[in-house]
Image 1: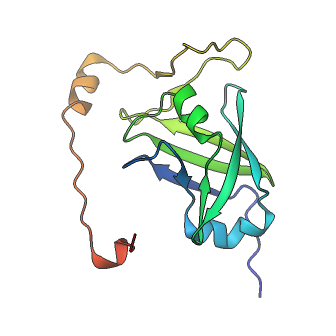
Image 2: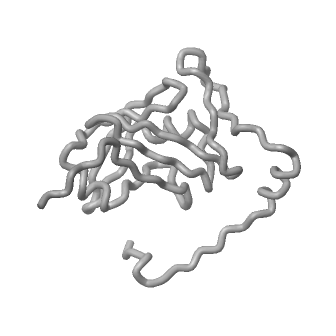
Amino acid sequence: MARKPKPKPSFFKVLIGNFTPRLRLPALFVLNYGEILPENVTLTTNSGKSWNVKLEQDEGEHYFSQGWVKFAEDLDLKMGTFLLFQLVDNSTFNVLAYGLSGCEMEFEDGESQTDDAEPEEVPLRRSARSLFSSLLFICNCVHYCLRKA
């Protein structure tokens, strides 16, 4: 029996490594929904602003490519940012971004955003901010987590 698709399929990415030129989509997401995805998709944020991004295939992997750099720069994405991508129709992803504080990043409305506008994280109390500034990530890598380059 075929699996019934979710109303809003989603995936997340934690930005690590060199995420700036392009961003790889999870293989299982592409396996389940790749047939409905067009070559060009739209990434939107809750501010209402949107970006056109090309979806390209390279050696069996699928990536957000052309337009991704502009998206990453406009949102001032940094190492460790957590992104949640929700497929709202065949060609549009709503993107939620969470900063290192663990809180959702807020962006200005699409109509009033300028080139030098920077996203802001929801403010934290001073004591909580100092707690997050000293956190470290520990990653346990096992052979099945790694893929050949």
